[in-house]
Image 1 (spheres, rainbow, N blue to C red):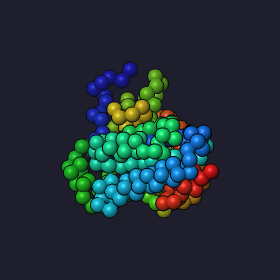
Image 2: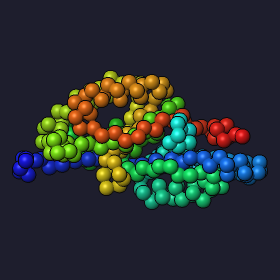
Image 3: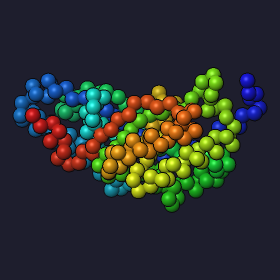
Length: 257
């Protein structure tokens, strides 16, 4: 067993906006049971909610996007980034009170915070303060990319008896993450990603959002990273959720009877 004295301190993180993913299934029987007028009122109210949430980008007070999911794991996914969990709670509650929500069944949710690790930066340094300026601010307080497709999945690092990410030294973790990051850079211009940390906030350790106009790129980047040592030895992946961005008017098309 490794001695505690051999372990380095946990690497620092620089944290930005909080993130909330809310996933729903449509209760089609209940939706069909609504009158045409009731469905119209529900759609109008949902569009009001969506427009209000997305308007946060205008004053750089957050970002929101909505996606229509493929497969049986859900139908509608809302993604919100905000400076505080109180604002996320208000958004969640506002939608929960809406007429459309009466015809939706929550299927999954995920709470996390946009995170940059100081792996390779020598631990906690003055960079934590400088991160609020310039290019790093955009990474910590991002606008959700307006790509056609999104792929969201949670993940953790292995804590097994034979291999345990958290028992590696800082130098070992830094070297593994360096090679891992080089793969991601090969997809610049094809895939954008937002990494959120969720230790102490949700069941997994990180949430990953990938954004692209070509969904095939999701398979390519994840497939290639699976062969990278840090993923092959230490990564644990949750369920994958893929969706199409819902713009103004799209919700009506998806819910049309």
